[in-house]
Structure formats: C-alpha cells, structure tokens
Amino acid sequence: MEQSLKEKIQNKFLDSKVVLGVFFVSCPLAQARETLAWLKEEAGFIFLVDLTALDHGPDASQRFEVKYNLLNLEEHLRILLGCSFDTSNKSSLPDIRDLWTNTDWPSRELWDMFGLSYAGQNCKRVFNSEQHPGHPLLKDFQAPQLEDLLVEECEEDLLSQDSVWSKGEKTYWQDVKASPRGASLIGLKYFEKEKLIQSARVEIGYSHKGIEKLCENTPYHLMTRWTSKLNSLCSETINTTWLRSVEGLCGLEVPEKSQAMRMVVLELDRIKSHLSALRHAIREAGLSDLTDLLTMQIEKLFQLSFSLTKRRLNSEFVCLGGVRNDYPHGWRTDCLKVLKQADKCIQEVHRQLIRSHQWMERTKSAHITPYEALDWGLSGPSLRACGVNFDLRKVDPIYFYGDVDFQVPLGINGDSYDRFLVRIEEVFQSIAIVNQILDHIPGGDFYDQEQVDSLKDLSGEITVPAGQIYTALEAPNGELGVGLVANGSGLAERVRFRTPSFYCAQAIEAIFSNLHWDQAWMTVHSFNLDHSEVDK
Image (cartoon, rainbow, N blue to C red; front, side):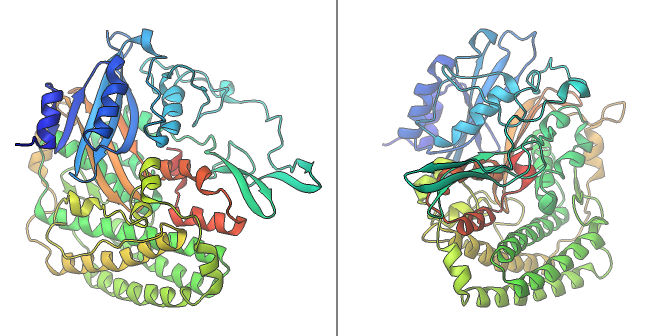
C-alpha cells in the first residue's frame, strides 16, 4: 500500500511536529539543499511561500535558524523546514534560486536584516540603504543615532534622462520616482526602445517601517497598533491573522459571535481593497466617470467602518479573545444597504469596462502562466487569474467559511484583464458572504474576558507559552502569513509577516518585458501592490 504524503514526511523527519495542521521539521544546514530538492521534486511542495530566519541571540550555541515555508497545493499540506547553525556558517546558506526563482529578494533580505548569505551572493540590501550600519533583526543590534543614518545624496540624479544613441535610434533610461528614500512603493527604471519596455529594475525604496522589530519589543495585547499599519485598507485582516497566531499558541477559542463578526470585517476589507485597486486602474485609463462612481462607493464603506470602529483607516476592531464591541444600533441594516449599493455599482462598472476599447487594449497584456505564477510566489487573485484554484477560505476554512456558500472565481489567461475580472467577481462573492453572516449572527458574548485573564501574569501582562506557529489568511492580495516564535515571556522572540505584495513586486521586473508603458502601469494596479506590504 502506497504511503500517504504525511507518512512520508513523518518517516523522513523523525522529529516532526504538527501545529494547527502545519508540519515543523528540521535538518542540518549541510543537507538543506538536498532536503529542499526532495520536498519539491518527490513530495510535491512546488510552492515556496516564504524564506526567513531567526536569531536566538549571541549566547546561543546554534545562534541562527533559517526557515523555509513550503506548500503542497494538491494535498493542501504545509511544511516549515528549519536549519540551525552557528555564526561560523553565516555565509554557507544554500543558493536555491534554481529551485525557486522567488528566493532572490528573500535571500537579499536575510543579508540585509541578519547578515546571512550564500557563497558568491551579491550582498545588496533590499530594505535599507547601503550606508545603514549593521543588521537590524539581530538580537544584539544597536540602533544608530539619527546623524549616523543621514547619507550623502546619490551621485546619480534619479530624475535625469541619460540619453544614449545606438544605431541611429534614441534609447534612454527613465526613472519614475524622485528618490530611493521616498515613501513611494517602487523606483522603476526601464529601458525603452520603440515605445516598448526592454528591461526594468524595481527598487523598493528605503522607507522600511521595521514592524517586525517593533513587534518583538511590544507586549502581545498591544501588537495591533503596529500590525494595523501593514495595509491601511485591510488592517482588520492583518490584525486577525496576528491574533490567530497568539490564540493558536495559547489554545484560546474565541466565541462564535466574534468569529462571525470577524468574518464580516474580513470580507469588508476585501471589498474595499478590490474596489480601490479597480479605481486606481480606471483612473489610469482616463475613465473619470467610473472613477467618481467608485470613489463615492468606497467613501460609503469608509463611513461604515468609522461607525463601527471610530476609524476610517488602520482600525483595530478585532482583539485578543474576540472583538472590541458589539454592532452599534442600526449598523447591520446600514451595512446591508451599503453592500446592496456596492453590488449595483460594481455591476455598472463592469458593464462599462467591457465596452471600453481603451480598457481592453491596456489590460489584455502581461500574461502569466500558472507555473510562472507559482515560481514567483504569487498568490490570491494574481494566482487564481492564471487558473490555479487555490483559496485558503476553501482549502483551510476558519470560523464559518466552511458553512457559507460562495464560489472561487478563476481566470484563464493570467493577464491584467483576468486579474481585474477575478477581483470584480470576488466583490460579488464577498457581498454574498456578508449577507449570509449578518442574517445568521450567533448569540452570546463577543469577547471572552475569562480566557484572556487566564493568560495574564501577576503584573497584568499577557504571556504566551513557548512554541512556534504559522497562521495564514486569504487576504485581498493573497496569502498573508504570520510566523510567531514565543519563549514563554511577555514578548515574542520572533515575529514574521509574509506579505503577498512583496513577492508580487519582485516579479514585476520579469513581467514588464516587452510591455507598452501604459500597459505596464495597468499591470502594477492589477496586482494592487501596497507600499507598506512591500517595504514592511
């Protein structure tokens, strides 16, 4: 009888542990590449979700641990492979870019934040400037003084156009943002010839928020002040992902009513995010009437959020143990009314877009195959637009997602048109989910004070049992994951955020090849890249 995949993993990794359905395994660093190749080629873990590291501190014998997050899409099985090593092996990481293309930026991040690299790696920082002293996520990192962070102006004027003549045709580099230290999403340089982009270079910019470092120095119950800033439009989604990791380690079960209320804000986040992406693209296409229509609808959603959380952006409605308050009087009726208007709005927008020659011309581009999407680490609507039927709400349902009726929209061509179409269809499905939940809100408490109090120590601080966990949610832009390593104190030892926009931005350089400039910016909007998610 053929062994199941779980049995194969348990036989190969005798020390494997399972936490919330995730296999945590380990192997020596010298065997990492061989093990990773086996997991991909023999065990079917073709999707590398994330690559990160952990510093146990200068006193630990095995100071560093690099972690590989892999996913088997057919079996819906996830595995986290950890490789521990000491400081003498800081430059001995395996180069696995031939196995997974999307490990380029994460490998640069390991050097930037931890000083870890593989032999022959071009150690170019991805988040911080080259002049930044030290590696910020090391436990013994000393924060520099402000004057130490001031760097000389770049020798190259990034706004200038350096014209070059070749074979009688003018070609040039052009930059689209004022400074690599600005708060913009990306600095993009492209080589244009005959109005087509021949090559592109994406620079994130040096606006690193340091949220992971901040979270490692913040009590658990105050962490949402930072997590809510990872994406202003879907802060409740990020907060929920973080809280589920803490609740999972503590074994805390939130009340059914708060589960349903969390689902409502999760889907409202998805609607706001998708409509915002569509609005930016429509504005780029010059369709002002539809832009105004979407702006008014998004404003109504903001007002709905304000009446519930007293904030338009960066809201903190969900909390450890449930949600902060019950629905205000009349809120559910207002929500249903706004969603009914949103349904009519998106139908009208879709009807006019498919009749727009300008829209169709700009979006029928940037085709991505399913294999390319997985190789670059794309997820969410960007992956489903290629025809890959993978939605965490279906394959790993939380709360009441397994009970509500909704469909997973899929594309065919994997182009910008399909990415927008998937987002439009997901708005309809999210509206259907919220309607079903609001019609059947469970009774009972929205917050479990007794369970939360049981986690507090004598000083009133919340402590989390030692252990590690990875939780993921289907965020509007794709898989949003939180890796938490706790040491039994009131502070986390390591907090890792796997943000979908980071991997989408990495793929832009390859996708932009042979695109017209107008099509290129429409492609950026189709991925809905968020500043904070990329440069977190």
